[in-house]
Length: 363
Image 1: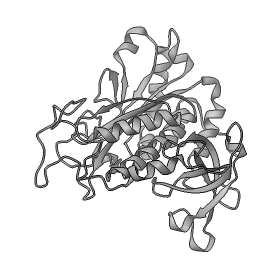
Image 2 (image 1 turned 90 degrees about the horizontal axis):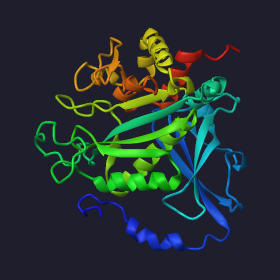
Image 3 (image 1 turned 90 degrees about the vertical axis):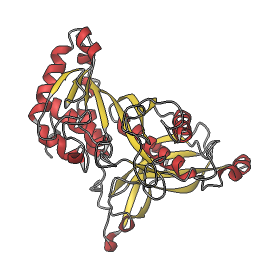
Image 4 (image 1 turned 135 degrees about the vertical axis):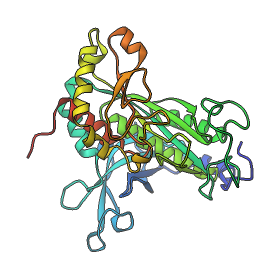
């Protein structure tokens, strides 16, 4: 359980109300991405539906885009179109979480809706059978914006004992991390693991392997759940790529990628082809791989340089890492280590597909 010193929620008092009869209705939480890569949500009541809801069953809703940086005051209505449905680990029962896309009233995707183009790229290149796995690093902060567990005036001991650490003085707020892990499992998110990271108060969760557009959907919903759970414990979640300046590791969103050809015997040929294509568009990738990434990709702290593309086997200081086992087997996947922790997974997975297999045809 959380200690009282940082628990701001009365979540325990809510528990008996979760068992109340909802009289044939469900709570549907609509979740969307705002104009600053933040997450918003609001809830509506829907009738219970035998067998549950699919995105096509759900009504389109709307919100005030002028309050989220997504529309001007004079034309503020933005529409929420359901695209994925998950069981709700907070309200339980038949209640649901709904991931949505944002659309303008002229029938065009909102400028911050990067999912629409990503989905089209995945459909165009579906024959490649792309798999993705993303490693989301993040930092837990107290309400003063300082990493949890850090001295009030000063810094903890240098990096070393914290990565995959166990024990007091090495890790903090494992309760938040484990609660998030369980909530993702309940919601059907393809979370594949967790670990403490190199900087104290920094953690990582992994999602995948996911097929195509499912990668972005599952990672965004996992981010939403993390924010909601940290809220219960009175903590903040930072996805800043360099949350603390100095001799501390930054935070990334390492992106693992493969196609059917890469995964089969002889796949190293296709892996090398993909790497050379990624090298040719290094600047275009960096442009969509997260804000503030220049403070992280310095060539130090297990990163490559933002200005120079590199790759190598088992090299965590390279732009692209080929895992040792992949090199030994001659097939498998690659890890793009350039994306920052605050990057949009739709932009990451979309540009990888575009670079390796071609852009969408012009209208």
